[in-house]
Image 1 (tube, helix red, strand yellow):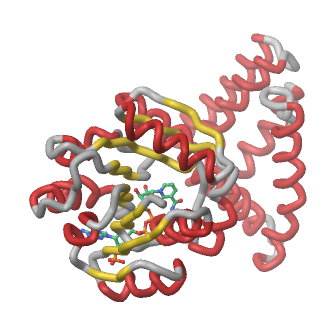
Image 2 (cartoon, rainbow, N blue to C red):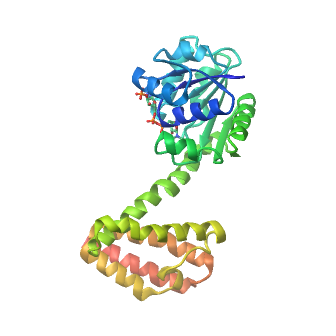
Length: 296
Ligand SMILES: NC(=O)c1ccc[n+]([C@@H]2O[C@H](COP(=O)([O-])OP(=O)(O)OC[C@H]3O[C@@H](n4cnc5c(N)ncnc54)[C@H](OP(=O)(O)O)[C@@H]3O)[C@@H](O)[C@H]2O)c1
């Protein structure tokens, strides 16, 4: 049985602690900035000492997960290293998508093995995270010993792994954030237009959910670009111009967003082959015209 310390008792740390315990690992300690969070995590995980003494907690473990907010990971790691908290040969992970394993170099300098292990998932709270993490893709990067432990953990969680070069992590994370966070932002953009159209705010999201699910199913089953539908995909410039006209009248501050997302949509439509270069040029020139009009 391998002993694990969780440092950073937030959503991901708590969920990982719970899942690892359920899968036969021993959670020996949960360290956090506040004792309150550590205790709450301990209650959910069902074992481990709750504490704010980070170095002493890490010292009890062979595997240390630093699951603090991204901005704290490097300094927390330095602090634990200075406190002599990393056992020689210990494995230290962080779970950030944006940062490489290099930010854990203070642990490597004292003889630990380091890697980043990023669950490619949107984890809004502990309950959701416990359901969503198993079976997810994990992006892993780091040194060989830590990587092979990362693979073992991913396998335990019935996940799948992708590997990445350390210096490409910010780009990878930008891609993941666009897909997850901008999807939420795109839905909220649509909701603003529904509101401007006088559709009851309470009902708006409910009415759009089947459309969102249908689109997701298409992306899943036939992929991109095939999943693209709508006026840009059909080369219907009249409808696109209607959209631009009403948005510039009713919600001019949203016009730029529509046009920029539209430009990406034109790229997809070209790839799908449902529009030709000249259709694309006509639509792009509409975006240019309406975006220019914003400057007047
Ligand atoms: N949420 C997601 O969707 C998601 C997905 C993939 C990866 N991740 C990664 O998972 C990691 C954790 O994210 P999260 O969503 O779990 O964040 P979170 O819920 O905000 O939890 C972060 C925890 O870090 C603790 N912390 C902050 N500074 C600390 C310090 N100096 N010393 C000790 N503990 C400290 C906080 O403790 P206190 O409560 O005690 O103040 C907090 O509970 C991040 O690297 C994030 O990028 C998140």
